[in-house]
Image (cartoon, rainbow, N blue to C red; front, top):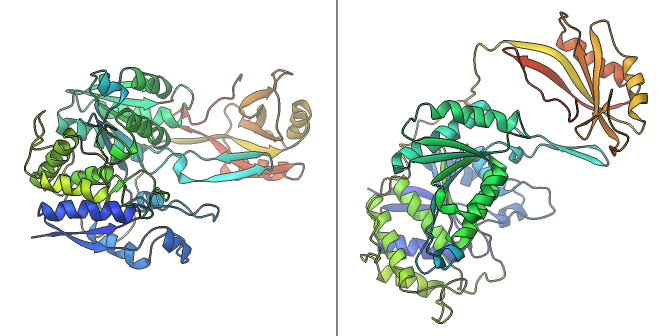
Length: 484
């Protein structure tokens, strides 16, 4: 019984490396059937703003699994990345990328005899990848960073379950909660809560800049790391560099209903059509996909053949021993096929419980919506963001004219640094301020009153946006300004 999956060839070298991988699958008798879907740059150019046809979307949602080559998003046309869109639309919340030393792929660490074997789990839906940005003034751009409790718990629990399946002893949380106290702070808080359910796994946290330093000095000390989206994106590529580059970095995007396995390197248009591309990353992603589908024997046989081939010094032009002539894509693929059934000298791979094999869930009838229940909420004020070229003291006097008996003017900041009621003459300003109004002690205010303050203020100055100041279960849900 064959499993049907959706396949998108991709752009640039995508069709060449996809053909190579499917040839290996065919030689291995992997029980797969393919339905090719139309996605990528040519479909943007044809007027599909999402980069895929409606038929492709329907096919992928019906089959629940997409295997894709690298894809290009046209530059300068205002369209969103097809890769990010696919991951977000189908809620593939966990990006898993496994990095390890490969014989035949020389790196600084392999030459030093330091083996690398670590897994990065990256949150895949939220963070700055929401792409919500605004120009508040001509000189000031603002982007929203969205971190949610349900989204954080989803990916963090996946990371712990992955670590348990692999028999890992350690899982670290990379973060920047020392600066982004509410967003990264929420992610870290959820990590610490979930960790209590996995006592056999040593759960630690590390500030992401310190993490990057340690990854390039002592990568062997890490087994698995879970991070937010943007930080996970950066750290994933850093780790790819430790093992030879993106050409050796598989990628799996896991969701409860739809999952995507892909090569994350570029489309390499400069070598497209020349038949010299390296298919290893896509093949490694395909091996992960086979395990996800439950075909662990096929996955192990193909992985052993790949490892044996690399061990023998067979390589494409982008890596390997330069004393050995490089192989083109077809010759490299032929070598892997010829080596099916062989095992590398270091010992073969026979099973690898990277993924929980999931059955396709019933087609949902509506969007899933998750929210924490029974949380008390209190409105305590409003931050009004305004465009102005006047000095802080003058802006404060203007802001006081819209005060009511329920409110007081608490603070004015510029680029996050307090400039009123105290500040420094050396703080350089731009033409966008945050003006904070808070309710007086023992007063109760409504949403309408908060909006009225912003509306009344708008009669004197340009209001760019407003954010309510909230308390949840008595804990403030906003940050202080630098120097406040």
